[in-house]
Figure: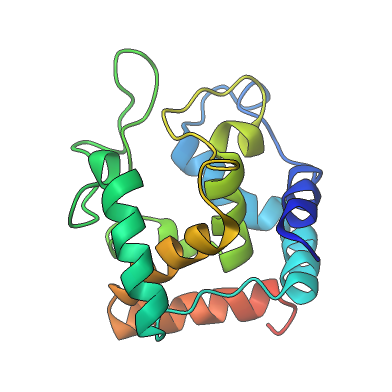
Length: 175
C-alpha cells in the first residue's frame, strides 16, 4: 500500500478531538491515538510494511543528516526537545517533545509515527488543534521520513527499542 493510502487510512480512523475533550493537552490526546485507532494502525501496519530500520547504518546516517536539517531546530540536536515540553506556552501550543527515551515517541508504532510526521499532529488530532509541528508531506520523501524515524529509534537504549518492537507487534496484530 502506498504511503499516501496509509496516511488516508490513519486519518479516517475515528479519533476524539480536543474540542470533544477540552481539558486534554496534546500529550494525553496523542497517547489515546493508539487505543482509538488501533484497528486502523493494525491494518495499516500489516498491509504497508512500514518499518523503521534502526540497524541499517546507511538509513541511520541519512536520517541523522535530515534530522539535523529539518528537525533539530525544534526537537534539539541531541533529541532533547524543548524545555517544559509538557506545559502549554502562552500561545496555547505545546513545546516540541524530546525524541530520546524521556519522550513519548517510542510509545507509538512505526505506522503512526510515519503518519504523524507526514501529515502533522493537527491533521491527526483534528478539531482545529494547532501545533508548531508541520506535516512533511511534499517537503520530505517517504524514505526521508522513515530514515529520520530510524535514526531516532537507533538512539534509544535497547530496552526501549525492545518495548517499541512489542508496540509494533501489537499494532500489527501480533500481540
